Length: 328
Image (tube, rainbow, N blue to C red; front, side, top):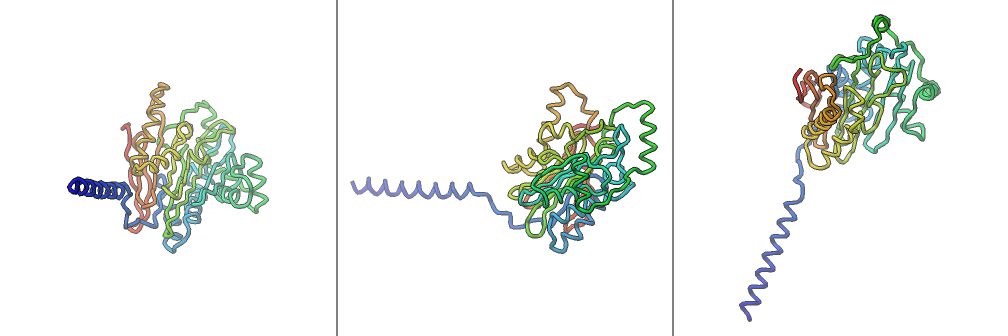
């Protein structure tokens, strides 16, 4: 009887020890080194945009302020033909701008189809901070912007007007992948306080139908931020990003334990799968994602070669070619 009691006691202690070890092994291992601050942005103009964002982040500034300041750089540059001032018009000759912004508390603001305002990202932030709404469009967005003191300006530059008039001769609507007549600057950042924010702004596809809205101003499509997990932003053909709620998907995949790189790759795989199901040619589109998690780890991936993005952290500011699904 004594031996039996001793055996049962020993077995119980051993089982308890195994349970404790199993539970402890289930706990995620803490990353002792977080790469912060850090900022990522899409395309080559991300280099200059990152510099403006880094000027804030490097002084312990907020990620929200950094991403707004960063994307304002290409918005205000008439030589950048896919964002803000200098953006290409729709088929009616009207320049309509889309933008959204999101902070670490899931505060969001967005504008779509906004005309005559050089910095739609700042209007989107005003929507976030000064209205009970999250999105304003068209004339309503313009009226709100003017009420907030934004200046009404002619955004058409000479080169854009020439291209539009040339396009009118044939009026053929066929955007070319990787040509920045349909691209965006998306920016995501992690500040020194460990908080994430993101911004996204574009003039949309050149010669689009008036009223067309892509993914850029849509939270969950062109941009998504979850301060517990990470952030993602997208570029390229917005219709395909909307179809999979792309940036929300990337962030949720990171929540499930995938790295930013793995999450971007799976999101692109979803785009590819749906294109195949609909018997569409992948060579006609480009979709790219960039992602950032709470540890400051990054990832990117796109449908076809040609997409690049900029990263600025303690190692400096550099342009990186994204991995891709197909080579064209």
